[in-house]
Image 1 (cartoon, rainbow, N blue to C red):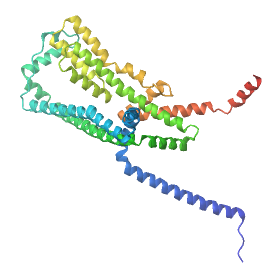
Image 2 (tube, rainbow, N blue to C red):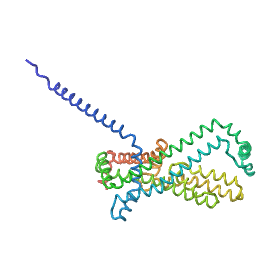
Image 3 (tube, one colour):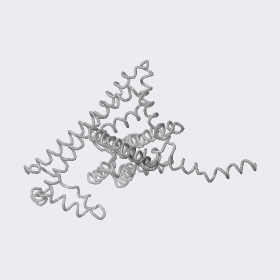
Image 4 (cartoon, rainbow, N blue to C red):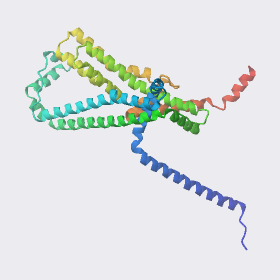
Length: 374
């Protein structure tokens, strides 16, 4: 005759069975998540850029769609074509020309056909480094093969790095092109996508704050885009005007280079400092004019450091330093894409933390007592 088991033994058996079932299901879910990530990981950067572009351009897309009678697909197509013509194609041509210039420079240096013009006597009068620069420049003018021979190992490594940088920029431009196309598809279905995003946030943080968090993410992405694209455009216009006033040749091309560098978060000083050297080396300006152009071009090259703090936090329900620190920290860790991700994450974290602070249960009795006493 079987001895009946005690109730606590039956409870332990049922509990262990349920726990085993939960662990198996959790393991299967985790395996599914890892497999999905392995499949999707090559497209993470592409989709992230597409979402950023779609969120940034969606107000303009809606304005264009209203003018076209509500045709969302046509508006998205026209916006993508305009972006390709205005941004992608000039950048591609610029990078191609840069690659050809680097290749020709390396080839002429290797074939010993490269010639360096003689330096202006005014170069030797530059403070601190003028005499050294004049001596090296004069030696390069009189005996360039010897200078190239002395720099041969470094020159080979430098050319490889330069060509590698140009190739990586070309790959980035190609990825940006595909991101633009996918962003157009997202914008064509933008309203349903916004509803799905709001539903996801409501499922994560609750229906009370789901819409607030979705709007915060959207506003942060747009604010960072304004702080990147808007600042780059303003800086390119200012530098271009100053180059025209200084009589620098190819001022429009250099302004376009400043615009591309600003979008890529590269300092505009890479353009303005060589221009300053060119102004002093040519000797076409008087001392007062050269000093004026030098000061203005140097300040224009640093203009983004002033404009970014002013434009990054506009329209965001979070303090500007939070958005700025998130953008800078994200850029330091993950490049340009990290600017948007870092600013969004830090803004969300700030809102969650402040909501937790505001929901302090110890302050509720005090508030009720104050209301009763009042």
